[in-house]
Length: 252
Image 1: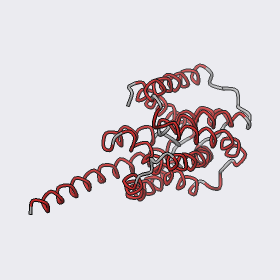
Image 2: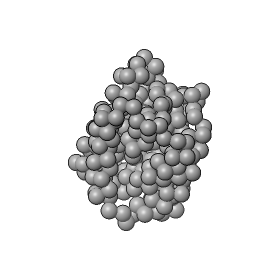
Image 3: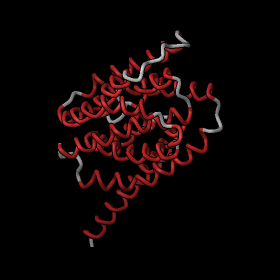
């Protein structure tokens, strides 16, 4: 009887944890669908609190996979394929290398460096309202930096935002192209985490359980994004950059 009560408490605790994680995944997938990024950065502290960092990062990658795939499909008409190709050329090899390094990497200093960078980007954008438009090949470098950082930290979506914005992408073109670029990176990370024995049955189970919430959040977000202006969209993205930078500096 005691064993049954203990099993019931474990099951109840697991379901409660998954309910909290699903609610967070829905809300932050919606945020990503509206702003083009931010969900992963904000979801990582939640997953870390619930599951621990080494489980949280590969779990986050699985939820981002479904969220990004949904955003690609919902915005497929406006994808900019040349940018996606250049981004993938840099992201894939560095994402794989970073995924293999995850078990031993010092994450704290890298998080704080990214926080400084993201806040500095917003200041720079305000001081230079008409920034130089990056070339298509420059996105290979953006992809390389993003692939390495994302594999080690779980999500650095805000790192790419300034470059896609400077290129002139907004709303569905920005959201879909950024999501497709990130998708190449997340697929590579999953392969690397699998090679490093980080994709445990627990991680796979939790990732599958959270997928419906992320898909629902992406769908609701798509309904919202078409109703806001380009100016409001850019302000929203910049606010997200500041919030993400603050989280990284705080070490969350």
